[in-house]
Length: 298
Image (cartoon, rainbow, N blue to C red; front, side, top):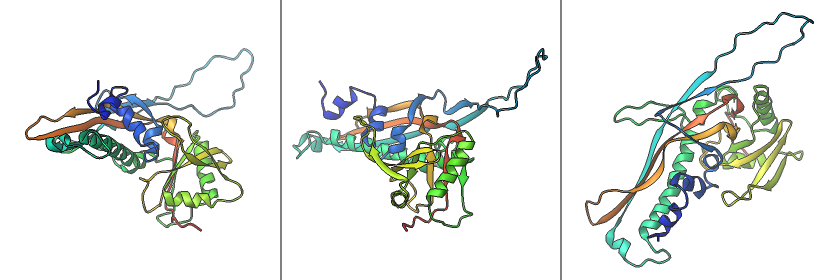
């Protein structure tokens, strides 16, 4: 029998899955991308792409021939250790509480959600990667580090976000072989998108599962539909939005998030949550970023 409500939840699925599901509204990117396994702190994967079509017309009785194959590309990202710890005095745990049975269980549930925020923030904000060293943490590259092909900037000069600008980004990404399905935006840029006219913006129910249920905007374009998803961790200057294909992104775990007790040294209970993971970004050309937006609702 579980000693507290947190443990009862933890018995059913590992903590990494709990973190994925605990705050789907506030961590839409982390919650949407799949999970895989890392085996080294330098996580590597191979990437391949199809060649361009050619005029393929051969004479009857032609001589067989071959072409040199293009080697696959090896990519990598570093695993990053994340940690949160809490402490509750033995007296605080022992007294009766209003609305909760255990102060430690309550604080652990809260810390799980805060750790989910840390994960989402890292995916969106981390623009560099670093192998680290003793005394210096390893850092994985997030979206700003990886998306380099389909970058739509304006030389640093802010400009309005328009439907045509999104369509142009989709056209180039489509030509490069991608088909983004979500548009990750700040709350302000979500308001801008809601002003698009000509019936381009519609609304629909989100995933009807116990993991994610929400109303989302759908932007109908010449290259398919985009789910417009608001993310509270997008830059507050509202200067960029991302078009993403989440099926080409994975959370690669070297160590799944786990909870543990910190050795007792005083009249206090101490617990921690930690894990080690990285972003595996495949098919970088399948994504885009639009930069230099003014965030003005016209």
